[in-house]
Structure formats: structure tokens, C-alpha cells
Amino acid sequence: MRLTTRTNLAMRTLMCLAVNDGKLVRKSEIAKSCGASENHLAQVINALAQNGYISTLRGRSGGLRLSRDAHEISVGSVFRCFEADLPFAECFENGEIKCPISPCCRLQTTLKRALAAFYGVLDTVTLVDLVDGNTELHDILSLSDPVIAMLGTTRAAPEAKMQA
Amino acid sequence: MRLTTRTNLAMRTLMCLAVNDGKLVRKSEIAKSCGASENHLAQVINALAQNGYISTLRGRSGGLRLSRDAHEISVGSVFRCFEADLPFAECFENGEIKCPISPCCRLQTTLKRALAAFYGVLDTVTLVDLVDGNTELHDILSLSDPVIAMLGTTRAAPEAKMQA
DNA sequence: AAAAAGATATCTCTAAAATACATGTTATCA
DNA sequence: TGATAACATGTATTTTAGAGATATCTTTTT
Image 1 (spheres, chains in turn brown, red, cyan, yellow):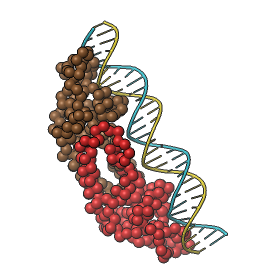
Image 2 (spheres, each protein chain N blue to C red):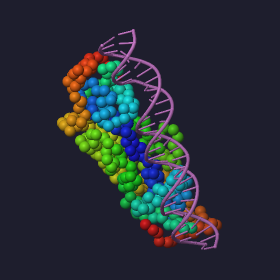
Image 3 (cartoon, protein in one colour):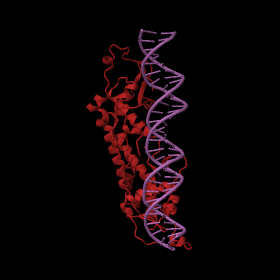
């Protein structure tokens, strides 16, 4: 029983975006500050965008930002979303089940209750809870203000419509 | 996030032994009635014995049985035992942790709470709860009484001291 | 002594996760 | 308008750990 790093990276990405509230953040910046492979992160970002958690902007001055208020994003919903395609046990798979006791297995129902308890805890926690007042986290994930950091570079503060 | 089949097989084995209360059951019989590979099961049985859940008897008329009362075996304890060697996430591993936000990560503490809730549910359920009055399960896992089934064979009802 | 059971270490296979690569699309800016 | 820099996305490769197989050993009964 191990969390996929997909889900782990998804949460790190969301935390990073929450810390840099509203600002556009590049994938490469997230990869760096979250200690993730940029390629792997690309797939995670894609999934986050397709599930409506973030908005992405292509192009030269593109980047990512949260597309919902951090209050509205619960850890539970993200986990359910990213762990959905991996059944917790054989008896939770769709196709035919080889376990002979599956039809009358009380362990199965017990596991459902335990998983409900697991996700129940995660449902009570939002992105804000993870980030708010966490100064140490801000120090690690907060990127310099692009307006200042990019002085003398080609990058400007963008103002465009975003997809998803 | 997926349960290891190790843990799954451990639970099936214990349920099978609980149904055949007190009787010696052979590994091959469990493998058959639980739909498991006999080789994989061997390793699981070994771990169950070394952790004091079952007693094994070698030799010609050997087999397995529970070494504790089924009331005393909680699902939670078995799960903790068998899932112990697989850390739930990178930040729960022993060695050095590569995740940069680990020292101040509130997701980590949230996960600990969620896992506690998960195991908390499992702790309230014992082997007896899974088996008692479950007639369908008995039909699947209960082996014919060896005294009757083995009439005309070389096998006799054994009475010997068991290890572990 | 032979046979039948489990004990245990090691090796191989396999599936899925992780990672890398390549190409496409979009947007900005000189 | 062409170059560049960003994300999108499908595919391929690598890695890893779980699962399964094999072989040898020990124990016990007959």
C-alpha cells in the first residue's frame, strides 16, 4: 500500500501554486522547487488542468495558476481523482475477480469502510490548511516576484485569458 | 495506492484457518480454496508463523492452524504487520528524503492522520467478525473433516506439539 | 529408509510506475 | 512574420518491486 508519486506531485504542485497565489508559475520552476522530474510533472499538470484544478497558459509568457480558490480544493478530492485509476485491491477491479471468496467476503466491506475513513480525513483538509501561515513552506516554494526578478529580461507581467 | 497481495493472501489464509477451527490444514488446501499460488502462499505462511499468528507442523501429517484465538486477531494488526515494510510515501521512508518541502509539509501530517483513521477501522474488526455466521464463506473454505475424508488413505488425525 | 509435509534462500518474470523523448500547438516579441 | 519559449500529448524506454518459480534443506511419520 503505497501512494503513487503522481498524486504526491499533484499535491506539491497545488501547494506551490497556492503559495504563489495568482501569479503565473512555469512548469520548470515547479519542477525545481518541488524536486520533481520535469517530464513526469508535465503529465501531472495535464491531469490537474483536465480536472479543473489549474489553468494553463501556453506560449512564451505562459504558466500555471490555480483555477479555483484554494479554499475550494480539498485534499480528498485530489486524492480521489488521482488514485481513481488504481483499484485498491483485486476485488475492487472491474473485470472478473479470481478470488473465490469475493461474493461473501466481509474483509471487502471492511476495507471499504476503512478507505472511507481515510478519505474522510482528507476531505476535511483544504489547500489553504496546508499553506496558510506556513512560513517555512513559503520560503521554499515562493518564487521571486517576476516583476522584480525579470527586470532586464524579456519577460513581462502577462494578462491574457486562460483555458480550462 | 494498492494493497499488496501478500496482505490479501495473509487475510484469506487466516479466514480459512478460522473457518476450519482447530483442524490442521495443509498449505496446498489453502492455496486451492483461496485461489492463490502455492509458492507465493508459502512465503506468506512463513511470515504469519514468524509473527505468531499461526502454528505450523512439519512432516508427513503436518499443516497449519491458528495459534491464537480468532477473537484476539484483529485485521488491523495483520495489516500493520504485512504493510510495515512498504512505506506509504517517500517522506515515510527511513533514508534521506529528496522532497524539499518534507520538513514543513502539512500534507505529511495529514496523511498520518488519514492512515490512523484507516487502521483505526481495521483495528475494530477481528477474524471472528469476518467469519462468524458467514455460511457462504464456510461453504467455500471449510474442508471436509479429515477423519471422514481420509478414510482409506494413509492420513490419520495427528496430535503433536507445534512450533511458534 | 522413504515419503510427505513445511522452511527458506535465490532466481526469474512481469506489470506498472516512473522517466525520457519527440513532436505538435500556442502565444509573444523583435 | 519568423524565432523563441512555453505547455500538450502520445509514445517509448527504463526501472523497480511485487509476484511467482525453482531448488534444496529440515522435520516428522510410517
